[in-house]
Image (cartoon, rainbow, N blue to C red; front, side, top):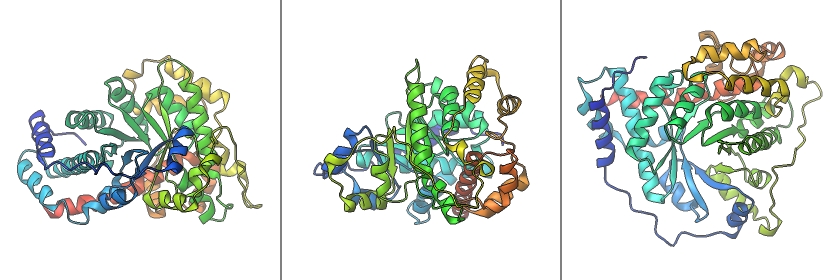
Amino acid sequence: MKDSTSTAVAEKVRKIVLSQPAEPFLPPQVATSPLWAAMKRCGSSLWLDTGDMDEISLMWRREFTALTTNNTLLNREVQKGIYDDLIGQVAGELKGQVPEEDRVVEIAFVLNARHGLRLSRRFGAKVSVEMHTALAHDADRTVRYGLRYREISPESFYVKVPLTPAGILAARRLGEQGVPVNFTLGFSARQNWLITSLARPAFVNVFLGRLNAFVADQRLGSGKAVGEKATLASQRAVRELRAGPGIATRQIAASLRDGAQVAALAGVDVLTMPPKVAQQFERLNPAPAGLSPTVDQDPEVELAPSVDAKALGIAALWEVPPDFRKAVRDLLERDLSRWSASALCEFLAERGFADVLPAWSPADIQGVTADGKVPQYARWKDRLARGEIGLDALMTVSGLCSFTTDQQAMDDRIRSKL
């Protein structure tokens, strides 16, 4: 999709976002917690994963430093109707200046920026803001919108970029221009080795709860520790790269599903938790003195006896083999500023790693969207066994498609107000 947004329109949008009434800061009597303080001493920064002001107000502690939203979470807020007047205002301001579809993307940008700014001002926190999913495969537009987030409030935002070939190249360019990128929808250590090496974002992720759900829901195993094992392996990989020059990337443990996972991931650079998970951890109330870093642990994963681990490709979630590392080193010797997304995919395929960034056909996207939030193993089993697609890559495209579904719901509400 060609971006028809002019500099004048971008400036008008920036002024609209900044002209909204300022949020009062959270009162200074925010509770502190010895439990969360102990988690911080283990080396973990603590974020909440929600866009709901009331939920945050109930759960916010002095030890928390940031908030993260996504297409799903923002859509929940938009569907409450709290931004209908703003949608109408922006629609009127932009009418006749950009085509309707671009106007929808522009209004979605306003909603992300405005809600993120409200959260940042209300809680004095950094906020991760999301790109419209229509930008996921367009590096140039991703860069332009990332720069526009910075122009609105450089001190408030981390900019989320999704894991696609174009997203890797866009994140690299944004980082070179000083935009802190939260590179999202990662599921494995090898994905994050590639992303950290090439793009050097501020943060990478492992969506660990979705990994556990994939295994458990389809009776491939108990599901316990799958995501934790991938997250801890990715943390060690990122830590190894961070020991070299010029890399400051930090690992996020994302998509936590229960309070016990918090202690199990103590020492991971960042834990971003839904409020209910943070509440569960507080109710568990482990002794603060007993909390210690787990980063160098390697939990066991139990698969069902009938499951062929090699055919499933589950080891790709936590292994970063030497030949993959060499391929990435060779990539770094190229002038990536001139590369396209397809060139990046072709390079990895030539080195035997087509499964990391596979080509997804329209039929594939239709199938993975139909699967819902977690891909259905039966649909993809044969291609996983043949090594055509990686389990991590399948989980990534599944996550992007589920976010796209929620983005479409938000877009529908926007269109209803045009």
